[in-house]
Length: 222
Image 1: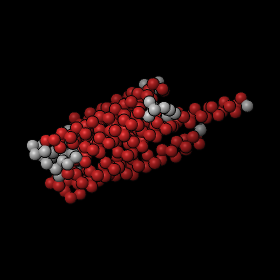
Image 2 (image 1 turned 135 degrees about the vertical axis):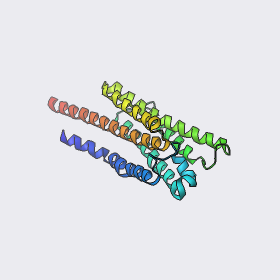
Image 3 (image 1 turned 180 degrees about the vertical axis):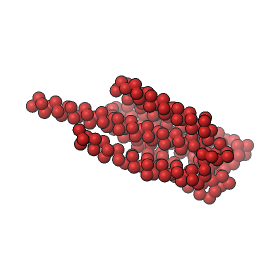
């Protein structure tokens, strides 16, 4: 079985390295640059940092662009990885991937909407910006929720529901207790990446065990 653990680590190596060597440093640099946790304005967002030079300065746009480039494709990749190794087949099963792609697209579209004017000066752009961003976030959370429900049905492990409860509590804490929009955005994204990483690890371990016992059984029969 040790060889199977090595296979799991090998297949998940990219996700683990990406989360801790790319995403975590990005969040650290963002916090070190703008002090988002203790920022006096609780409604500061990545969009304000990126679009309003009086908030984010000349480098603000780079942080917003980097967030979209570093997070949206990776989230879609993690969902694709789950579907590939979960053994699910058919168009219906892959709708979750389309949901993840839609969520990423809405988030990117919302970030791309100009946000450099006050709501009284550009109400339509504000509505589009906020609307796309909220829909994207909801679709992303829905994607993770559906995946967790699938795993619960297949494994009959109620402990996963506890894990999801911690996930929901973390989201609630980031947005209502910290009362900070930017912390909520990066915190929710990081939590989703961690959740999908452990989901993928669970799926890989389950499949490797199934294949191991299958091959072992065939060997015994022969």
